[in-house]
Length: 135
Image (cartoon, rainbow, N blue to C red; front, side):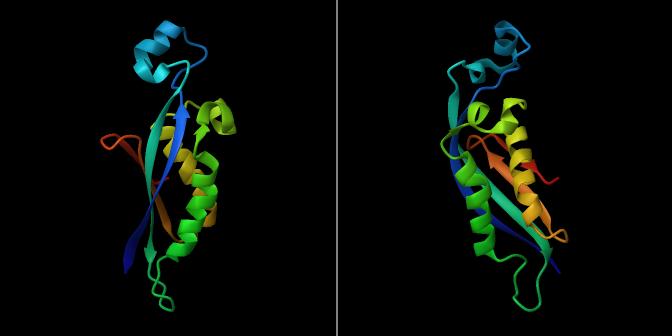
């Protein structure tokens, strides 16, 4: 029996969407207000889900305390109250769109989730705009 369990988390971070090789005008036409040279921030909401078989011994797909601690260590502590463009090495060369942030989070968590389990990341940039990534 395959079951999906999920854990919600959140973090606050600033970013700027732009491509340095483009002119300001082109960045502005593609990214609009998100191209603010002084950055802007979001209160990101995150849902991390793990799917798989229920362990017969524990009754868990994954121990939720372990998932909580993993998200805290690998995502919240690293990204919360950070300027993604400036403070997170990967985003110095990758535009920190919601799509790319979701992929980044998935890549941070995947090595710590059993290979027999599926991992899904849903990242809400705003209450109405969100991205889902599952590898």
